[in-house]
Length: 324
Ligand code: F6P
Image (cartoon, rainbow, N blue to C red; front, side, top):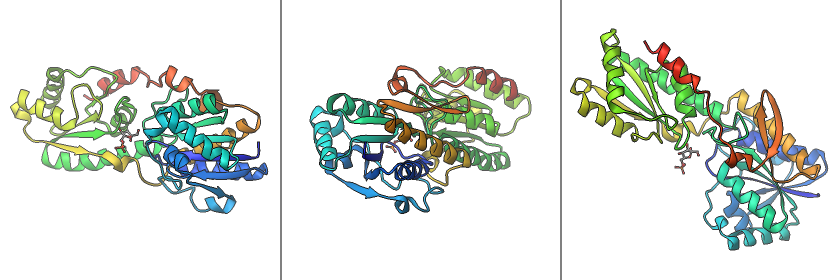
């Protein structure tokens, strides 16, 4: 293999740049020709492909976002889209790909390999930490720390005004950020897609907390909670319990996606980037890098959608025990 392409796909995540740097420089160290593909699979279809060298990735290890830009590409879901993308890769002589992204991005890589023989390695990059096969994804730790800082700030104003804050975190299918930030921020309750939310039970919890002397409270809501988003849940609580009219809602939103990656994310991205390129050099394909028990390993890329990364359900017990 002489030429490898790298792309970022799906939602950006802090640490993606550190991964791109590691991938390009590992390739250069192995005398490979490295190419950056802009705007994910859309850029592949459009031929937005540029040569990269060690200097192309200078000064980016500490920057959030992705130097290569990213996109969610509908056209790549179709056979024709993938054929157009493969033709662009052939034009540039690219035989191997490193795809940094989430589940959807991996599906695309898998099909590209099957249909066009392009060797593909996936690096898990998403703030959601919802990729099967790996205990950590690139970007989760940074997003989590941003979320915790937000809770800390909100707690100051909540306490000052004796208010209940409903704080919405990202996570359509997974409550990792909500659960971990709630625990780290000492929230009274975390509502996540992994458990069913019953408004009457939530009201009871809030009433009991108030009876124990709590004057302000934080309820963290994952955006994908079954009872609705934070605004909906706050409204339902106000309707069920008029005494909780002093509620406020804050949606942290895309603030969680940006910012300087933590040291953990930079190191994770760096380790995964090096191992990803080395996997291609060893002739491997349709594998993903995974973080397991403090080691970066390789797993079949299909593990990302055939298994699910779940947080320890015992965290629910801990949260309940401590929110007295
Ligand atoms: O997948 C990452 C993520 O940030 C999710 O947590 C969130 O639901 C989604 O992306 C938001 O997507 P967009 O940036 O397209 O609005």
